[in-house]
Image (cartoon, rainbow, N blue to C red; front, side, top):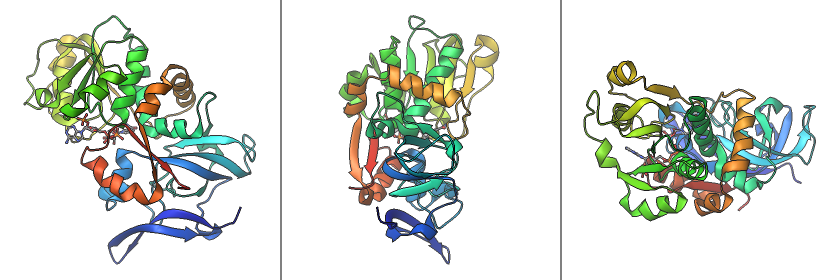
Length: 331
Ligand SMILES: NC(=O)c1ccc[n+]([C@@H]2O[C@H](COP(=O)([O-])OP(=O)(O)OC[C@H]3O[C@@H](n4cnc5c(N)ncnc54)[C@H](OP(=O)(O)O)[C@@H]3O)[C@@H](O)[C@H]2O)c1
Protein backbone atom coordinates (compact mmCIF):
# COMPACT_ATOMS: atom_id res chain seq x y z
CA UNK A 1 0.00 0.00 0.00
CA UNK A 2 1.18 3.52 -0.78
CA UNK A 3 2.50 5.59 2.11
CA UNK A 4 0.01 8.30 1.14
CA UNK A 5 -3.38 8.32 2.84
CA UNK A 6 -6.45 10.53 3.01
CA UNK A 7 -7.69 12.27 6.14
CA UNK A 8 -10.18 14.87 7.17
CA UNK A 9 -7.58 17.37 8.32
CA UNK A 10 -8.30 20.20 10.74
CA UNK A 11 -6.03 23.24 10.80
CA UNK A 12 -6.03 26.61 12.50
CA UNK A 13 -4.21 29.62 11.12
CA UNK A 14 -4.46 33.14 12.51
CA UNK A 15 -7.41 31.96 14.61
CA UNK A 16 -9.26 30.64 11.55
CA UNK A 17 -10.39 27.02 11.80
CA UNK A 18 -10.53 24.97 8.60
CA UNK A 19 -11.32 21.37 7.89
CA UNK A 20 -10.95 19.56 4.54
CA UNK A 21 -9.98 16.21 3.08
CA UNK A 22 -6.22 16.17 2.41
CA UNK A 23 -3.74 13.64 1.14
CA UNK A 24 -1.05 13.11 3.77
CA UNK A 25 2.19 11.17 4.13
CA UNK A 26 4.26 9.50 6.87
CA UNK A 27 5.39 12.80 8.39
CA UNK A 28 1.82 13.63 9.39
CA UNK A 29 1.30 10.29 11.19
CA UNK A 30 1.10 10.79 14.96
CA UNK A 31 3.60 9.17 17.34
CA UNK A 32 3.05 5.57 18.36
CA UNK A 33 4.24 2.00 18.14
CA UNK A 34 1.31 0.48 16.19
CA UNK A 35 0.22 1.61 12.71
CA UNK A 36 -3.37 0.85 11.78
CA UNK A 37 -5.00 0.96 8.36
CA UNK A 38 -8.35 2.35 9.37
CA UNK A 39 -11.46 0.91 7.72
CA UNK A 40 -14.28 2.53 9.70
CA UNK A 41 -14.80 5.38 12.12
CA UNK A 42 -18.06 6.81 13.47
CA UNK A 43 -19.65 10.15 14.28
CA UNK A 44 -20.21 10.70 17.98
CA UNK A 45 -21.54 13.86 19.62
CA UNK A 46 -17.99 14.88 20.59
CA UNK A 47 -16.93 14.53 16.93
CA UNK A 48 -19.78 16.89 16.06
CA UNK A 49 -18.31 19.49 18.40
CA UNK A 50 -14.80 18.95 16.97
CA UNK A 51 -15.66 19.02 13.28
CA UNK A 52 -18.20 21.86 13.45
CA UNK A 53 -15.65 24.52 14.35
CA UNK A 54 -13.74 22.79 17.16
CA UNK A 55 -16.39 23.86 19.67
CA UNK A 56 -15.40 23.43 23.34
CA UNK A 57 -11.81 23.11 21.99
CA UNK A 58 -12.24 19.33 21.65
CA UNK A 59 -9.09 19.12 19.46
CA UNK A 60 -6.22 20.51 21.49
CA UNK A 61 -3.28 19.89 19.10
CA UNK A 62 -3.98 21.25 15.62
CA UNK A 63 -3.32 20.27 12.88
CA UNK A 64 -4.85 16.83 13.29
CA UNK A 65 -7.64 14.55 12.12
CA UNK A 66 -10.70 14.49 14.38
CA UNK A 67 -12.52 11.22 15.11
CA UNK A 68 -12.60 9.67 18.59
CA UNK A 69 -12.89 6.06 17.49
CA UNK A 70 -11.96 3.69 14.68
CA UNK A 71 -11.66 0.07 13.66
CA UNK A 72 -9.00 -1.27 11.31
CA UNK A 73 -6.16 -3.65 10.59
CA UNK A 74 -2.65 -3.43 12.05
CA UNK A 75 -0.07 -2.81 9.29
CA UNK A 76 3.05 -2.43 11.47
CA UNK A 77 3.64 -3.04 15.14
CA UNK A 78 6.37 -2.48 17.66
CA UNK A 79 4.05 -3.70 20.43
CA UNK A 80 4.23 -7.31 21.55
CA UNK A 81 0.47 -7.71 21.75
CA UNK A 82 -0.15 -6.94 18.06
CA UNK A 83 1.14 -8.08 14.69
CA UNK A 84 0.33 -7.03 11.12
CA UNK A 85 -3.08 -8.34 10.07
CA UNK A 86 -4.66 -8.09 13.55
CA UNK A 87 -8.10 -6.49 13.57
CA UNK A 88 -8.36 -3.83 16.27
CA UNK A 89 -10.75 -1.28 17.74
CA UNK A 90 -9.92 2.07 19.29
CA UNK A 91 -12.13 4.26 21.45
CA UNK A 92 -11.09 7.13 23.70
CA UNK A 93 -7.67 7.74 25.28
CA UNK A 94 -7.71 11.26 23.82
CA UNK A 95 -7.64 10.10 20.19
CA UNK A 96 -9.38 12.81 18.14
CA UNK A 97 -8.63 15.23 21.00
CA UNK A 98 -4.90 15.29 21.78
CA UNK A 99 -3.82 12.59 19.31
CA UNK A 100 -4.76 12.58 15.62
CA UNK A 101 -7.98 10.62 15.13
CA UNK A 102 -10.12 8.24 13.15
CA UNK A 103 -11.39 10.34 10.24
CA UNK A 104 -8.36 9.17 8.26
CA UNK A 105 -7.24 6.10 6.35
CA UNK A 106 -4.28 5.53 8.68
CA UNK A 107 -3.18 6.20 12.24
CA UNK A 108 -0.36 5.34 14.59
CA UNK A 109 -0.76 5.06 18.34
CA UNK A 110 0.11 3.26 21.58
CA UNK A 111 -0.65 -0.45 21.54
CA UNK A 112 -2.15 -0.16 25.04
CA UNK A 113 -4.98 1.93 23.64
CA UNK A 114 -6.17 -0.77 21.25
CA UNK A 115 -8.49 -3.66 21.94
CA UNK A 116 -8.81 -6.69 19.72
CA UNK A 117 -11.95 -6.68 17.62
CA UNK A 118 -14.36 -8.92 19.52
CA UNK A 119 -15.18 -12.25 17.91
CA UNK A 120 -18.62 -12.26 16.34
CA UNK A 121 -18.49 -8.61 15.28
CA UNK A 122 -17.27 -7.28 11.93
CA UNK A 123 -15.06 -4.19 11.80
CA UNK A 124 -18.09 -2.26 10.57
CA UNK A 125 -20.28 -3.54 13.40
CA UNK A 126 -17.63 -2.71 15.99
CA UNK A 127 -17.75 0.90 14.77
CA UNK A 128 -21.54 0.83 14.61
CA UNK A 129 -21.11 0.24 18.33
CA UNK A 130 -18.12 2.58 18.70
CA UNK A 131 -17.72 5.02 21.58
CA UNK A 132 -21.48 5.50 21.85
CA UNK A 133 -22.20 1.79 22.20
CA UNK A 134 -19.32 1.22 24.60
CA UNK A 135 -20.72 4.02 26.76
CA UNK A 136 -24.19 2.48 26.67
CA UNK A 137 -22.71 -0.85 27.80
CA UNK A 138 -20.67 0.79 30.58
CA UNK A 139 -23.92 2.38 31.74
CA UNK A 140 -25.71 -0.97 31.78
CA UNK A 141 -22.78 -2.50 33.73
CA UNK A 142 -23.15 0.32 36.28
CA UNK A 143 -26.85 -0.44 36.78
CA UNK A 144 -26.10 -4.15 37.14
CA UNK A 145 -23.28 -3.46 39.59
CA UNK A 146 -25.78 -1.55 41.74
CA UNK A 147 -27.96 -4.65 41.80
CA UNK A 148 -30.61 -3.63 39.30
CA UNK A 149 -32.24 -6.65 37.68
CA UNK A 150 -34.94 -7.18 35.03
CA UNK A 151 -38.22 -7.27 36.90
CA UNK A 152 -37.23 -4.47 39.27
CA UNK A 153 -39.20 -1.93 37.25
CA UNK A 154 -38.98 0.31 34.22
CA UNK A 155 -35.66 1.87 33.17
CA UNK A 156 -35.72 5.27 31.46
CA UNK A 157 -33.27 5.98 28.63
CA UNK A 158 -33.05 9.67 27.68
CA UNK A 159 -31.93 11.02 24.30
CA UNK A 160 -33.11 7.60 23.22
CA UNK A 161 -33.04 8.04 19.43
CA UNK A 162 -29.37 9.14 19.48
CA UNK A 163 -26.33 6.85 19.34
CA UNK A 164 -25.81 6.05 23.02
CA UNK A 165 -29.56 5.99 23.59
CA UNK A 166 -30.34 3.59 20.73
CA UNK A 167 -27.73 1.06 21.86
CA UNK A 168 -28.87 1.39 25.49
CA UNK A 169 -32.50 0.72 24.55
CA UNK A 170 -31.58 -2.36 22.45
CA UNK A 171 -29.25 -3.74 25.14
CA UNK A 172 -31.63 -3.28 28.06
CA UNK A 173 -34.55 -4.76 26.11
CA UNK A 174 -32.47 -7.81 25.11
CA UNK A 175 -31.45 -8.30 28.76
CA UNK A 176 -35.14 -8.42 29.72
CA UNK A 177 -35.63 -4.96 31.25
CA UNK A 178 -38.76 -2.95 30.64
CA UNK A 179 -37.50 0.13 28.81
CA UNK A 180 -39.06 3.58 28.59
CA UNK A 181 -37.48 5.73 25.89
CA UNK A 182 -37.50 9.49 26.21
CA UNK A 183 -37.24 11.39 22.94
CA UNK A 184 -37.87 14.86 21.61
CA UNK A 185 -38.67 13.36 18.21
CA UNK A 186 -42.15 11.79 18.26
CA UNK A 187 -41.56 10.56 14.68
CA UNK A 188 -38.93 8.15 16.09
CA UNK A 189 -41.43 6.33 18.35
CA UNK A 190 -41.81 3.34 15.98
CA UNK A 191 -38.02 3.11 15.58
CA UNK A 192 -37.55 3.07 19.37
CA UNK A 193 -40.25 0.43 19.78
CA UNK A 194 -38.52 -1.68 17.11
CA UNK A 195 -35.35 -1.54 19.26
CA UNK A 196 -37.35 -2.84 22.23
CA UNK A 197 -38.76 0.21 24.03
CA UNK A 198 -42.07 -0.61 25.73
CA UNK A 199 -43.07 3.00 26.32
CA UNK A 200 -42.25 6.40 24.83
CA UNK A 201 -41.84 9.39 27.15
CA UNK A 202 -42.00 12.76 25.35
CA UNK A 203 -38.96 14.89 26.18
CA UNK A 204 -41.33 17.71 27.13
CA UNK A 205 -42.43 15.68 30.19
CA UNK A 206 -38.88 16.00 31.51
CA UNK A 207 -38.32 19.60 30.46
CA UNK A 208 -40.24 21.32 33.28
CA UNK A 209 -38.41 22.72 36.30
CA UNK A 210 -37.87 19.59 38.41
CA UNK A 211 -39.58 19.19 41.77
CA UNK A 212 -37.23 18.23 44.61
CA UNK A 213 -39.05 14.90 44.68
CA UNK A 214 -41.43 13.75 41.99
CA UNK A 215 -43.64 10.68 41.72
CA UNK A 216 -41.53 7.50 42.04
CA UNK A 217 -41.63 6.26 38.49
CA UNK A 218 -38.45 4.55 37.29
CA UNK A 219 -36.27 1.85 38.85
CA UNK A 220 -33.26 3.37 37.15
CA UNK A 221 -32.08 5.28 34.14
CA UNK A 222 -29.41 5.93 31.55
CA UNK A 223 -29.11 9.63 30.81
CA UNK A 224 -27.37 11.06 27.74
CA UNK A 225 -28.86 14.55 28.05
CA UNK A 226 -27.92 16.13 31.41
CA UNK A 227 -29.42 19.36 32.75
CA UNK A 228 -33.20 19.52 33.45
CA UNK A 229 -33.86 16.12 31.90
CA UNK A 230 -31.40 14.38 34.25
CA UNK A 231 -32.70 16.40 37.21
CA UNK A 232 -36.27 15.27 36.48
CA UNK A 233 -35.15 11.66 36.06
CA UNK A 234 -33.40 11.76 39.44
CA UNK A 235 -36.41 13.28 41.17
CA UNK A 236 -38.65 10.53 39.74
CA UNK A 237 -36.33 7.58 40.40
CA UNK A 238 -37.73 5.04 42.83
CA UNK A 239 -36.33 4.32 46.28
CA UNK A 240 -32.83 2.82 46.01
CA UNK A 241 -32.67 3.27 42.23
CA UNK A 242 -29.59 4.10 40.16
CA UNK A 243 -29.14 6.56 37.31
CA UNK A 244 -26.07 6.31 35.06
CA UNK A 245 -25.18 9.76 33.72
CA UNK A 246 -23.04 9.79 30.60
CA UNK A 247 -24.01 12.78 28.47
CA UNK A 248 -24.70 16.47 28.10
CA UNK A 249 -26.61 16.78 24.82
CA UNK A 250 -29.09 19.07 26.58
CA UNK A 251 -26.58 20.92 28.80
CA UNK A 252 -23.90 20.28 31.39
CA UNK A 253 -25.67 21.86 34.36
CA UNK A 254 -27.68 19.82 36.86
CA UNK A 255 -30.52 21.72 38.60
CA UNK A 256 -31.22 19.10 41.26
CA UNK A 257 -31.62 19.11 45.06
CA UNK A 258 -30.13 16.55 47.44
CA UNK A 259 -33.61 15.15 48.17
CA UNK A 260 -33.51 12.10 45.85
CA UNK A 261 -30.17 11.12 47.38
CA UNK A 262 -30.92 11.61 51.07
CA UNK A 263 -34.59 10.58 51.16
CA UNK A 264 -34.65 7.83 48.54
CA UNK A 265 -31.04 6.63 48.52
CA UNK A 266 -30.90 7.23 44.78
CA UNK A 267 -27.41 6.77 43.31
CA UNK A 268 -26.06 8.95 40.53
CA UNK A 269 -23.38 6.90 38.77
CA UNK A 270 -20.97 8.79 36.47
CA UNK A 271 -19.84 7.08 33.28
CA UNK A 272 -16.62 7.86 31.40
CA UNK A 273 -15.60 5.84 28.38
CA UNK A 274 -12.45 7.78 27.44
CA UNK A 275 -10.10 6.77 30.25
CA UNK A 276 -12.08 3.68 31.30
CA UNK A 277 -9.42 1.21 32.46
CA UNK A 278 -8.93 -2.42 31.63
CA UNK A 279 -10.43 -4.89 32.47
CA UNK A 280 -13.71 -2.92 32.53
CA UNK A 281 -13.25 -1.91 28.88
CA UNK A 282 -12.71 -5.49 27.67
CA UNK A 283 -15.58 -6.72 29.81
CA UNK A 284 -17.86 -4.13 28.15
CA UNK A 285 -16.78 -5.24 24.65
CA UNK A 286 -17.26 -8.89 25.61
CA UNK A 287 -20.77 -8.14 26.83
CA UNK A 288 -21.57 -6.07 23.73
CA UNK A 289 -20.58 -8.98 21.48
CA UNK A 290 -22.74 -11.31 23.58
CA UNK A 291 -25.78 -9.18 24.43
CA UNK A 292 -26.37 -6.64 21.67
CA UNK A 293 -28.74 -8.08 19.06
CA UNK A 294 -26.96 -7.62 15.72
CA UNK A 295 -30.20 -7.21 13.76
CA UNK A 296 -31.05 -4.23 15.98
CA UNK A 297 -27.50 -2.87 15.64
CA UNK A 298 -27.70 -3.12 11.85
CA UNK A 299 -31.12 -1.42 11.90
CA UNK A 300 -29.76 1.60 13.79
CA UNK A 301 -26.65 1.96 11.56
CA UNK A 302 -26.16 4.11 8.46
CA UNK A 303 -22.86 4.22 6.56
CA UNK A 304 -21.32 7.32 4.97
CA UNK A 305 -18.07 8.46 3.34
CA UNK A 306 -15.41 10.74 4.78
CA UNK A 307 -16.73 13.71 2.79
CA UNK A 308 -20.07 13.51 4.60
CA UNK A 309 -18.59 13.96 8.09
CA UNK A 310 -18.98 17.79 8.24
CA UNK A 311 -22.68 17.53 7.33
CA UNK A 312 -23.18 14.77 9.92
CA UNK A 313 -21.34 16.87 12.52
CA UNK A 314 -23.84 19.71 12.09
CA UNK A 315 -26.74 17.27 12.21
CA UNK A 316 -25.61 15.49 15.40
CA UNK A 317 -25.27 18.81 17.23
CA UNK A 318 -28.85 19.64 16.21
CA UNK A 319 -30.02 16.27 17.59
CA UNK A 320 -31.03 15.16 14.10
CA UNK A 321 -28.95 12.00 13.72
CA UNK A 322 -30.79 8.77 14.42
CA UNK A 323 -28.84 5.84 15.82
CA UNK A 324 -25.26 5.41 14.68
CA UNK A 325 -23.46 7.05 11.76
CA UNK A 326 -20.55 4.85 10.61
CA UNK A 327 -17.85 6.32 8.36
CA UNK A 328 -16.26 4.12 5.71
CA UNK A 329 -12.96 6.02 5.35
CA UNK A 330 -12.26 4.42 1.98
CA UNK A 331 -15.61 5.37 0.43
N1 LIG B 1 -19.32 9.79 29.11
C1 LIG B 1 -18.79 9.33 27.99
O1 LIG B 1 -17.74 8.69 27.97
C2 LIG B 1 -19.53 9.58 26.71
C3 LIG B 1 -19.31 8.77 25.58
C4 LIG B 1 -20.11 8.96 24.44
C5 LIG B 1 -21.05 9.98 24.43
N2 LIG B 1 -21.17 10.78 25.53
C6 LIG B 1 -22.16 11.86 25.55
O2 LIG B 1 -23.44 11.28 25.44
C7 LIG B 1 -24.31 12.18 24.74
C8 LIG B 1 -24.94 11.44 23.56
O3 LIG B 1 -23.94 11.16 22.61
P1 LIG B 1 -24.36 10.54 21.20
O4 LIG B 1 -23.10 10.32 20.44
O5 LIG B 1 -25.33 9.44 21.43
O6 LIG B 1 -25.13 11.81 20.56
P2 LIG B 1 -26.47 11.82 19.71
O7 LIG B 1 -26.50 10.67 18.78
O8 LIG B 1 -26.62 13.19 19.15
O9 LIG B 1 -27.61 11.60 20.80
C9 LIG B 1 -28.00 12.61 21.68
C10 LIG B 1 -29.51 12.64 21.78
O10 LIG B 1 -29.88 13.55 22.82
C11 LIG B 1 -31.12 14.16 22.50
N3 LIG B 1 -30.92 15.63 22.47
C12 LIG B 1 -30.19 16.33 21.59
N4 LIG B 1 -30.22 17.65 21.89
C13 LIG B 1 -30.99 17.77 22.98
C14 LIG B 1 -31.42 18.88 23.78
N5 LIG B 1 -31.06 20.13 23.48
N6 LIG B 1 -32.22 18.64 24.84
C15 LIG B 1 -32.58 17.36 25.15
N7 LIG B 1 -32.22 16.28 24.43
C16 LIG B 1 -31.43 16.48 23.37
C17 LIG B 1 -31.54 13.62 21.13
O11 LIG B 1 -32.33 12.47 21.35
P3 LIG B 1 -33.92 12.46 21.07
O12 LIG B 1 -34.09 13.07 19.71
O13 LIG B 1 -34.30 11.03 21.14
O14 LIG B 1 -34.54 13.30 22.14
C18 LIG B 1 -30.21 13.17 20.54
O15 LIG B 1 -30.40 12.19 19.56
C19 LIG B 1 -23.44 13.37 24.34
O16 LIG B 1 -23.59 14.40 25.27
C20 LIG B 1 -22.04 12.81 24.38
O17 LIG B 1 -21.08 13.81 24.60
C21 LIG B 1 -20.44 10.60 26.64
